[in-house]
Image (tube, rainbow, N blue to C red):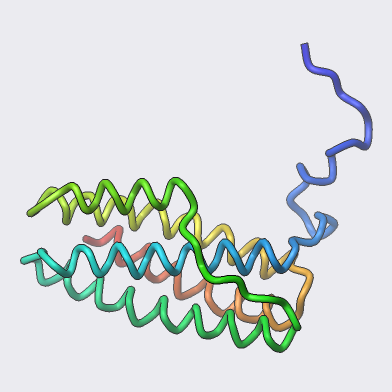
Amino acid sequence: MALVVPGVGMAQMTPNSSAPATAAPSFVAKAGAGDLYEKQSSQIVLQSTKNAKVRQFANMMLKDHSKSTADVKAAAATDRVAVPAPKLEPAQAKMIADLRGASGTARDQMYLQQQKTAHQQALTLHSSYAQNGDKPALKRVAAATAPVVQHHIEMLQAM
C-alpha cells in the first residue's frame, strides 16, 4: 500500500513547462560524465576494430564529444557555474570495464549497443535541460547539443 500525500513530490512527475527547474551543477556533472564515457569507450574500440563504420563513428564521437565538453565548460563559465572534473557514473564505469574485457567483433557489437543506450540517456539529459534548465547559456548549449545527439542515434540505428 502506497501512501500519497497531496502536493508532496508531485511536481517532479509532471513533464511540462511547469516542471521544476533542473539544477545546473547536476546537468554539468552528468554531461561531463557522459562525454567522458563517450570518449573513453571510443578510444577503447579504436584500439582493435577492423570495421570501417565503427572506426568512423568512434572518431566522430571523439570529435563531437570533445566539442560538447568545451561548449558546456564555456556556457558554465558564462553562467558562473563551477565545472568539476568529469567522473564516470558507476554504470558507465561498468560499461567501460565490460568493453575492455571484450575483443574482436564482440567488442564492436558491445560498443554499438552501449552507444545506443548512452545516446538515449544523453538525449534525455540535454532535451530536459534545454526545457527546464535554470541557467540561460547552459540551456542554449543543451538545446544545440540535442539535435547532434539525435543524429548520432540515427547513425547508430543505421549500423
